[in-house]
Length: 350
Ligand SMILES: [Mn+2]
Image (cartoon, rainbow, N blue to C red; front, side, top):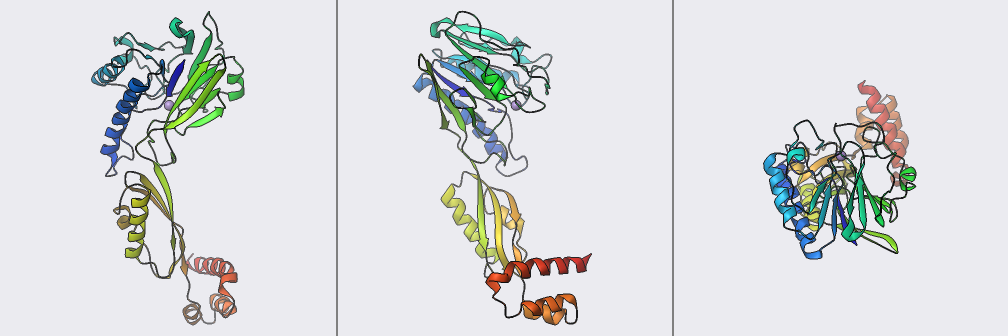
């Protein structure tokens, strides 16, 4: 039996709200979900597991209709889903009154329940969130039961305010596989036993690296899982080295070239490092307009001119300090010089 494990699609979310690419990302999240269903259609896994937060907030009726039509287009795959902390089952949630296609089962109970899929001798366990936060472990009592050969638990949470759990205790409950959702960075918690699929598309800037879903096989030999990169976009960390010759313009050009090389569809977190020309301050606004730049961290330090400092601060501690380093091998003592001057100059300003 082959299964796809997906989580945290967050349909409806507008990542990096206020950035020029937010709307595009909102559409890309939907596009990727449709693409995932295309993948299900061609690869025909027997089961598609959705471990919560399919939607970013309460789903609208038309959104459920859209998702439902997609599920109906893969009738040979059993879809099993649950509501997470974002799309939790608020009173009146359309999740509860919606009529799903035959191949779709919602684990919409408040405590763990079991769904048997006799065709695959598989039992799937899980429940749904009824509030934004749940501070006890929803899955503490869950154990495999019934007549099926294989047992999979869908589990959403794992942090302090969302069904906190200990992975070792969860893994000891006897399930063949625990399909986790909630943490957006994909992570195999216990090899071939318990994993976060991660968000299908990354949704905020700290979710660097690849995103996608988990492709698993469960048979007499046990479980084998592998992560499949699938997202169209990645948050990428870029570090640019600055020197005294770097200008605003040359920096913008270097940044543009790097982003072109690493993929213009990605979103970048940029860090500037090195020694900049003493009186130069880089324009973050201009750098952000160079492409999909969500964040700029400027760690550059001014390259102090000893001659000038000596003259400017003659007779003071700063002047004496600058004088002390004059003629010293700057490469060796640069750090001491820099930190010393920085401390002295900052102390002066206070
Ligand atoms: Mn969540």
